[in-house]
Image 1 (cartoon, protein in one colour):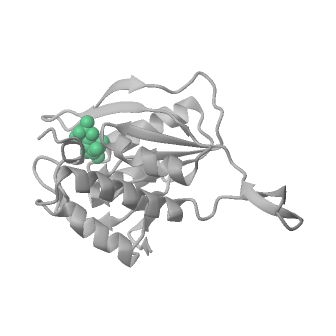
Image 2 (image 1 turned 90 degrees about the horizontal axis):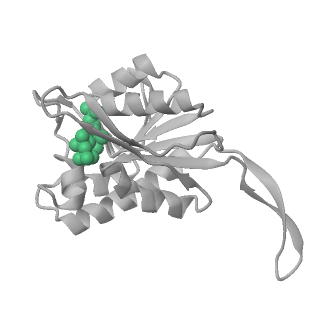
Image 3 (image 1 turned 60 degrees about the horizontal axis):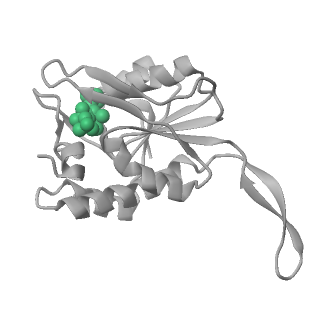
Length: 213
Ligand code: PRP
């Protein structure tokens, strides 16, 4: 589903996604279940986010006869934003086993809410056709916007952003700063609070994934 206010946003409202996101949000959902749900939701979101990728003809032989099938044409990279984006990687490389994973390390300063870069594992030269940035939370959009800017500086030909929960403030920021980057998400929430946490949201995804709260 697209949103009239946000032409860059693709909200996937499949019943399985709505069910899993609700369970993910619940305060009483434990760490192990939270990790499993992030993984399952990432797989479902990537199904949507990759739906229009081109395929190329590919000749094979079945046990019965030769045939021409298809295989994914573009070279894909997944770029998780540390830490929480790492929880999405296993599902991503299950979906596209030939993909490369490059990590970007960023945390949000608790007082300024500005992203702080601390790790960048992009190679010197661009060797992929499309990059999917992975982060379960799009709040102010600062981390996402900086990650996308870094990927554009690197030379990424095409970029898509995959989050599980998004705030209108973050989607607006990406629309203003990176209108060419579509955002695939499971839920568009109401707003940010005074500490830039998403409401109703799910709390801190990194802490819930790794039991650090
Ligand atoms: C969270 C989240 C995003 C960012 C979103 O990470 O995973 O990366 O904040 O906020 P923004 O849209 O306002 O930039 P956090 O800084 O908590 O780091 P962590 O993943 O290491 O917990």
